[in-house]
Image (cartoon, rainbow, N blue to C red; front, side, top):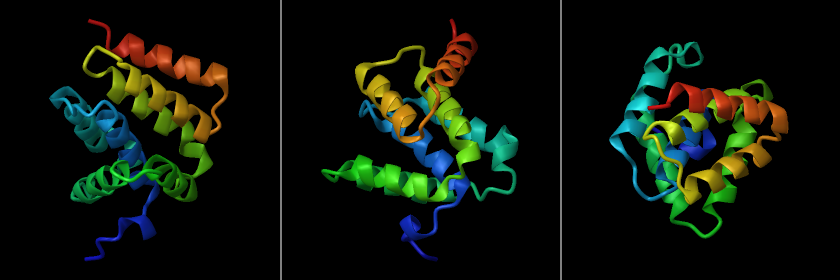
Length: 140
């Protein structure tokens, strides 16, 4: 098996990478966030046919990149190279759901969400609507 996922990221891998990145952004990966990721991969049509065993290798890639000085830039480079534009809003929606899963948004998560909006060139109003939906789904 090829362990160099950076050369072979699928669109689905990119979505997983965004979710993992948001979860890891505050250096505290919570069970609720992991459950949100697992549920998304298991239930959403965009992940139809996805090999769930890839979650582990994509996670390792994200963690390795986060340890590098320009790792976040490298991650966005990989994502923008492999994620079709039509899935940019999907990626942001998944990121928002993971960030909101534990009921709190800390500064690191908010900064990363802002960076995702910028890197994926999302319209401000569309992003606000996605954020509002995530907030509504995760209210306690």
